[in-house]
Length: 488
Image 1 (cartoon, rainbow, N blue to C red):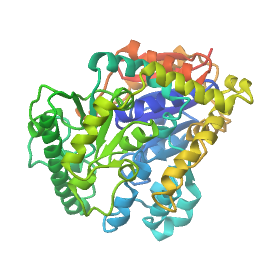
Image 2: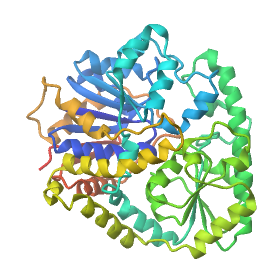
Image 3: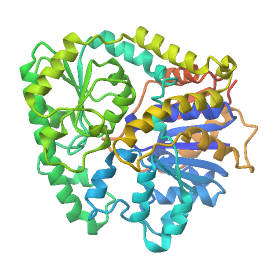
Image 4: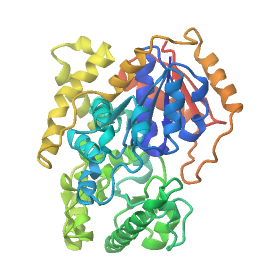
């Protein structure tokens, strides 16, 4: 029984996929995590498997991967990792299609399309060709996204080990998150938009995306100017700037300049950095939504960039909105020096109390992941729904777990091959298959590799927070592939 978890942007997706893989291992499911291009050739050789990947139901190069899985008796589930956050941008920019390239084939080759909320489902239907709407509607499924599930109180301790290390090294700091992605990793030419446009775009959309690029570039320049000023105004405060996951550190260094109180760091998932920070600044980034769910002190400066913006991201609307530089400066200083911030031990104790209170009527729930997870979701989702219902009357995040949904769908595949193989045999089979396939050259901006011990520590972290049996894990560093399965 195989669950393939290809990663589009490693830093954004790796931890939620590890959490999913460890949960699946307790159900006897072997999961394979790796870069989407590294795994793409193996699907045609592996029968009766599940593919869970990032993306929209578009007929592009990824749809072939769906075809290979389905042709071998498997199922495919996709999710847009940005989900609800950018909905209003798409609604207000109706001339720009939310689903360029969607057709009957791409719809047919998606077994299930997970959405973050009902508003996203509505947007998808409005951008689907008439002859596909009925089939598309049948495949839409509103679930609590894996990117948010890992932020629920029970799972937040997954990041404690890494956030402690960050805190010990940096001490107090202000976190700045870039969501523009104008300059990709290795792109330094201010007039070059090739990295932003990508390699697989429809020629009919070049003009549209060039216009979007120019708008985004202008906003990023204003963002950079604001950040440069506030850093200069506060030489006594440490700032950590995190570029977009595929963004260029050098391009931002040129734009913001060198400062003794600034680190521009491209390093792994943002969540442990949010945990460790004193305050967070963003301009409509989905990480702002993550920060809110982590009870961080989150400031949004979108209004400083564009006061007339009518298509603000959800993360902007639920953040502490800042309107001018003086206000931004004051809020930073207040948070940095005056606001008491829980240390990691206090936060962990607080989270433990929350879980104990939620489960005090039935302590035996701690023995079963699915029951515990459902209990936590039910008790915490009311606050999530409350946040979003204040933003948009039709916006509603599901109480249902996408992790549990994917596991249950995989278990339904009753024609399982290699069921008796051990995790090492499964790893060797996958390794040998990968050796005999040609892999597409990876983008220099998306390659990510980890120390073997670190990646296995994350599996251990997930096992602890999920209260499940320890899975067998193999990390094939040569191919940057993690295999998790066979809980013992």
